[in-house]
Amino acid sequence: MIFSQKDLQNNFYLDNIKQSRMFFILILNKTKITVRKTMSSLNGKVVLITGGSSGIGATCALKSSERGATVIIADLKKQAAEEVLASLPNKGYYFDLDICNESQWIKLHDFVINTTGKLNILLHCAGISLPGNIETTDFTLWKKIHDINLNGTYLADHYAIKLMKLNDENNAIVNISSAMSLKSFSFTTAYCSSKAGVDALTKCVALHCGESKLNIRCNSVHPGAIHTPMLEKYLDMMSQDCSRDEAQAMFDANHPIGHCGQPDDIANAALFLASDDAKFITGALLPVDGAQSIS
Ligand SMILES: NC(=O)c1ccc[n+]([C@@H]2O[C@H](COP(=O)([O-])OP(=O)(O)OC[C@H]3O[C@@H](n4cnc5c(N)ncnc54)[C@H](O)[C@@H]3O)[C@@H](O)[C@H]2O)c1
Image 1 (cartoon, rainbow, N blue to C red):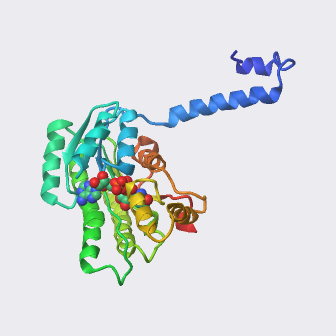
Image 2 (image 1 turned 135 degrees about the vertical axis):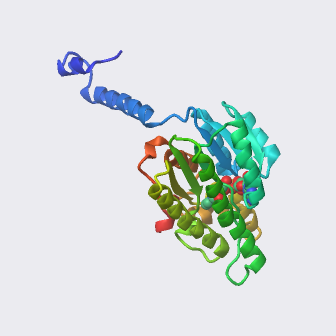
Image 3 (image 1 turned 90 degrees about the vertical axis):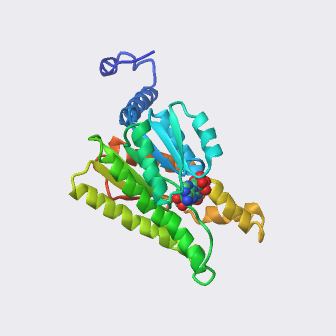
């Protein structure tokens, strides 16, 4: 049975039904309507997802497709990408890309023009994390982590902007950084440093695009520990010295909220920043980390 506002005002049903229950139902209905209205569709948008074969990137691919976007996954792992693409409700493409290789970015640029014809959103998820403090991190490891996480982000943003300038629609870049760029840990020195570089780059890109009146926003998302293969590798490493449950408990305890996050926690935030709902947000660094970075 549906009650109109007028019915309520007339107090017609209030004799028979508890007021509190009715108001609760009305509030719930209104909330649902509001949520539906604010979730912008991605119909007609083309979304490039680096690192889309696994973890956060794979979830971003699914959620983008569910909201109507055409997805391009760019990654090193073709077979895993094909499995993700097979699960998408909308059309998707795969491009074999090492994000630190500029000549491959030039080929990706041409691939986008020849297939989807445009790019609206970059969700830059590809990255690696390897442990090491300042003493145990040798120069090879230092350079590898910075090459993938920082140089790779430079190339991603640089070539995304080239493509986005070809259309006159609303465009957005979301760089997946880390809570570890905001709060440092000695055991991941190179990772923290590389992601802090991503943050500075994000702000410079946002400033440049704004000052140049390009219709491109740029923001970053800062995940806490998220249940993906990346976290699994750390749990495996720690399980050599303690039980897996103890290792998981240590990660959970690093988050004031009491637990690690899920890939969709990050994908939801990234897609919000990428959507037109966030049209006045650029140059923002958004922690999605259960308060890890402020603890
Ligand atoms: N999982 C976490 O706890 C966590 C926390 C903070 C930040 N992040 C960041 O989130 C992003 C996604 O991580 P994830 O947890 O989904 O990891 P993941 O390992 O599940 O996925 C990373 C993806 O990036 C791809 N990739 C790695 N190097 C690449 C390269 N050179 N070229 C192309 N693709 C490459 C991998 O093939 C993989 O598909 C990363 O930037 C990571 O630093 C993750």
